[in-house]
Length: 532
Figure 1 (cartoon, one colour):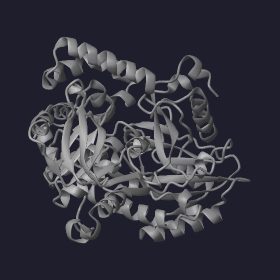
Figure 2 (cartoon, rainbow, N blue to C red):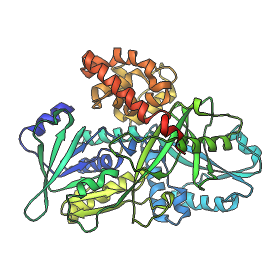
Figure 3 (tube, rainbow, N blue to C red):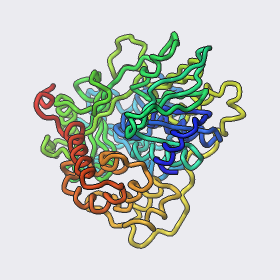
Figure 4 (tube, rainbow, N blue to C red):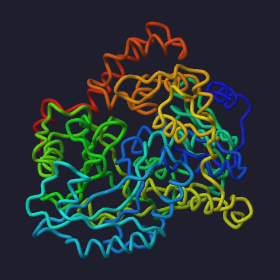
């Protein structure tokens, strides 16, 4: 059932759902996947695009969080590394191992001995052994060009990396396959309650029908998984203990790989605030990240990096790789995401805030926020268990069941590279062969992306705007110069008819996309560029 059919069904006779999920990021997509997989009649709605917020703008890491282990959050770290191992097993090509290097310079903390002890505990929690210690000479085999002045040793360990927007899209596809109705650009405007204050329904408005009367659905369970927006539905709640969200911004720079050719993640403690900052390979480019700052701007606007953050990240690149001479002119793109950190209001520094998730229940409205991308499945199951109450052991599927349907072990076509074949299996699972059978398998130069992927997205992945296609279904807008503006004529030739857009709509969408790119994904201009 496509998006328009789902909307038409909802506009007809009022439907009843076991669970309605509000929020199409990683947490909401995880809830929908677990709910539908458990046989619950499930609806998911997202006010913008799937993964529009934090879940397309994270640091792309699927990790246990060494910093959380170091600060004593052993339970959070244990759960995360086990979920990491699960995803590596179930979704290769979507979640892949990534070696990390931590150089230890004289006078810096932590030293190699202490860090190796921490890594031993980290590996024990994961049930694997991946850590190693290297001499300065051995380090250069892994990271040519790294500054070895006063380098004592380097620690290596393994975590994992993903494309967060594609991870969300894969979960949406899995949930839809199991019967969930999932809609982007549909806002939840009001929670309906009965005379006892218990949730009995939800009112919705679709972007394209905003002037029409609201769509109403019946449900006894609304799961508010809107992240940084969680307090908006909570304001309609009478709970005495609402989630208090502290929006914190993390920004990144995308550099051409040839300017900073790293094959593993290289981390260093930033001298300004003692935070770990890293360079890592992603989507054929190199990413520098991340910052951790208050975000006080309107959450409905594209978050953007500031000049101060650009300087902060370029400083660490120069410190790590002094011979690389990276400057602003080398930056392909940027992204900034807003983390929905649950705070106790104690006035802690941003990097000191607890990253664990929190859940609140108010007579059928379950609000969940915080946490880590890696632990989305556990967060989803906890929210559903709370919603189902005493019935959860009978109605919630086994914890052992797969999240991701296994990808068929088909023979690789001769004209597809092994790398592309591996990635397609992770991104699309059982649809990999269909994508190749029904689209152009030619790679777009300098991207690794196939034209068939754009065609598939236009047909099957609810592309409502051009920025959906350029920034989330694919990452062409991030990894090509100027937001891939030079590629837009060819994309138009291939995709306009698939999307059903006339010429006026295409021009409108192109202008919208380029404005979005300039505002949120390129280096800041004017006052923002000078912000320090």
